[in-house]
Image (cartoon, rainbow, N blue to C red; front, top):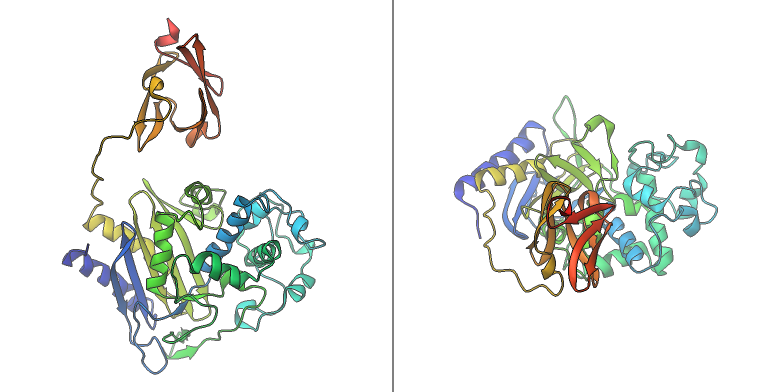
Length: 432
């Protein structure tokens, strides 16, 4: 399904404004709806030094969007029983500084680690080996205690990449290729650029001339920001976050990654961080994804899983409104073409729980148990979806009651009342 002409024009105008107003040599963008790439646009005539044009299949460096792939590898290890998110880093990297920090804290940037590794600026210099990286690490470099605040740490993702490589006995890049890029058919996402690929630039603040930026192999820091990709490939990746592919990661694990763990105090409640994902509260909606930057390159990828829309952006400037452009494009799409409510169809028969449907009361507070999307839904003063754990036992899937168990209490074959987290639910107010 294509977009209306006025929607496409508004999207292109926003891309043109980002390119022109913040002086980016070239900008590429794409918009998704229902998991499909429905619009692409580009602006600028200097994807390369000789005037190469941008396009949906031209590679740009994606910077820290790379971190989301590293986070997926970590969650795959967790789901396969190879690690726990509460494991200390030192369990998997013995003798390392910051070994008492947990894998969860590294994923969420809440471990109090320094932002960058010691030594020359890693983004602008040839990378080092993991042994060289860790030899320069010291607990005294911590910026604060763990779980005190969100403090972004590129260094932490270098450690996470090494952990998954050791657990699988396979190099980080091979894991990315085998376990993510291959299944998603992201054939134009690579470690080094493959033509056609953009050149990275910064723009001189006074002359307006282009200065080339370096692009080195990041070595042990590659899991934090090495990869190159295209609009078309990033659209496939964005679609995964809308409709998770179970071969890669379960829907439950994706929801776990998209749950806030740490917040940036400068942003208040508008921006937070999950497990490898940036979260943007766009009231009443939630955008998930990541931004990216490396010398000469900027990138953005965000989706709204509920409205099933998303946007991806790439640019070849060190500074500019490219990463934040993706959320802006989502807002434009939603304004011009609001998502159409999905067609209602009858619910499939429940395997268990039909007896629970209807009205309940917590004291005098009315509640309802109904079916939505084939799943039991408790709504009212207490709200959660309910997953079956077996006969007469259910578990809350979200909200205040997430993880709590609902028990069905009977007199003979007849249901008398329900309990969940000490709340007693009866068919009449107070069971009278």
